Image 1 (cartoon, rainbow over the protein chains, first blue to last red):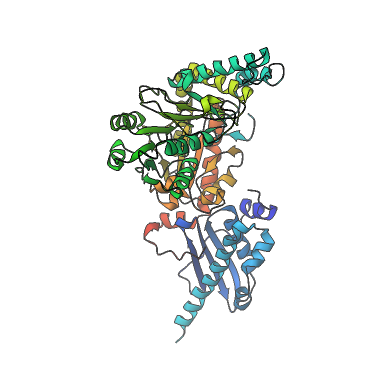
Image 2 (tube, one colour; image 1 turned 180 degrees about the vertical axis):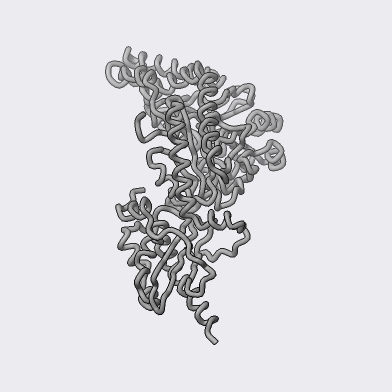
Length: 129
Length: 406
């Protein structure tokens, strides 16, 4: 299968690989996918005020899955929570020129963003008196 | 050392220069049609064909008269399965095969099921092997054919062919074995092994693509087939069509070389295969061998690298030509049906890579390949949330995964 140059770039030089402290109050963690399906994404955001100041990922999956999550972390940094909620998988497909058979990778990345935000919001809700 | 390094000898092999040399005259000066009985061009072609029949027969312990030329193993499989099914339909309509067979067998069986035949798909053990006991238990009075491969193309596991052949002969059931990966790699003797039908493909043993042969037993028992290609009645009526003379000459020569070099070559490829595995497992943990360590092709190494997805690994070792059981390398998004049938777990199936060494592989190439694999796996594990979890002591099998709906 031929990969686009952008997929290759993210695969060879993934951005924001790593982990944030998942116990921290201002960190949201999303883990989506399943090993049996061949892809698992862990995406984390660190929020200050209303803004995402840091994002990290780790992904088990094909090159397109790695690229989709790497790209997602790039896009998340600096966005507000509301802006982050607007990221759509189709934007990832377009940016990375993913072929139809790889669209599920972008769906998973969108799921990971939503899941990390939901985790963050849950923590905020739980933290309020 | 030339890059990329070819380590996909189960997919195909290069034509041996000695094979090519034998073939060349049959494209130009000796171009006759082997079916032309009225002139020297035809006689020359026919004599080349008959020599190839002898060479193939000698490699598998058959007589030249039992060799039917085909376009390759897919055709050989179709002819054997459909030809037997049609010929023996009055005797019964039950066929036994296994879930780990090549798609050419499985899809032909599916076709026969639509035509009213019943097929039992045995599940192999965790190493990919089908036991003779499993075959015995599946036999019925209306079973006409057992179709089990000699060596598996993905994991290299060898079935207990001789025991299965003996059982089939004792029960009066025909035995077909797909010899595509085995012939030329391990000793094959259709008499001692009680095989009734066996297919061979030239391009898996350093011959050209597009040519193969089907062995059809002539006595004890005499196997009869309904032709699947009608026409001029070539190949004793079993397979019409003008013979591919240069291809057949190449197949014959490839078989002659394989027979002369089998023992030495098997030792050499075994050493290369094991050297590769040793180097990799010395540097990496969580590496799982898919297949049967004892009963295995000398040139096949299938490994799963836990916590790393196969396609991403292939991207990381792009100086090596290998293949993966991962879903992502196929259009279907399903991981390898062979690894699934062996119940190795879908997570490990997604992490599998097949390395095939061969006649032209060197120690230097194997060492380079091992280095590439080790570096890529280490890098991808740093990227892998599963590896992180494993290091934190979390068993990924106990996690409640939220799979998305793809």
